Image 1 (cartoon, one colour):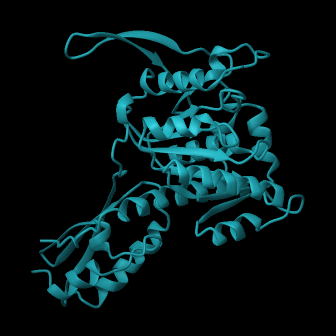
Image 2: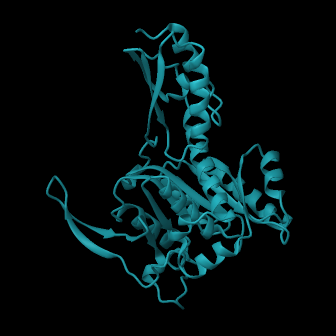
Image 3: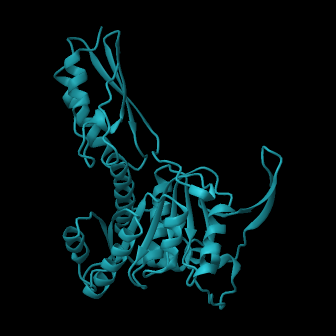
Length: 356
């Protein structure tokens, strides 16, 4: 039994929540076939972390119900494929999307948020790496419980016969991790100027055996320093996430960080309000984001379970639980992935994809 033109049009014109474009423009509708009284729709999510999947599937079924012929039923086959451009630039990094996580000032929980976003994306089924580029205060090894480990160097032979050496990153709860902290003593300070920073970040990106990643999260130093400029020169970043707390003094510094990212041509995906609640207040980040025409990716409440997990090096295990902080981090990770898809769609105008 054939698929009617009316049914094709009804599905192709459905607006995708969060993206604000029809399914045809979003390139999520991969096929519509009909036989033996069944219409089969093939739908591909642009990331496994795409929010509101069940609700949108219900919308598709509702839209199709009025266009099905008598006796026809509907089956929806879903899959997911993280979109990206393998923006490794001159360093040859095989990551579809590189996300920088920064802040205007220290002490706002930037590293905790970067680590949580990493594990949240992994929990959705994405291949994720975490680079701790906060060379002056590397805290990712402690947060992930691998501070006593040290990466190994491994010789490799390229297809052309050339011999190279790659650094094997530390793996924690399924996530590949690299940090300056692995090469420092606990009480050792890093006293470097810009050129040394540039060299270290370049080595971590180009000489680490990251493999093929859907997302590489980079935890930046606080403030507006050299590392963001280095990244803008080496990579085509998918965007930056700016972390701040609700107080006015933190928001003022966050605005400066946003200005820096814009000057170096790094898209700002949105702001995250951390430590939201009675102590520091609530909603200041959302108000600031609205004034700057940016999304607020979420508000992370004060949650003792998150703090304890970080102190004990168990950030990789928090997504086995379902507390308020975990739910908030899942939401932030989903909104971050969604904003990347939107940034990709806002490039050159995409033609409508007709399903044959």
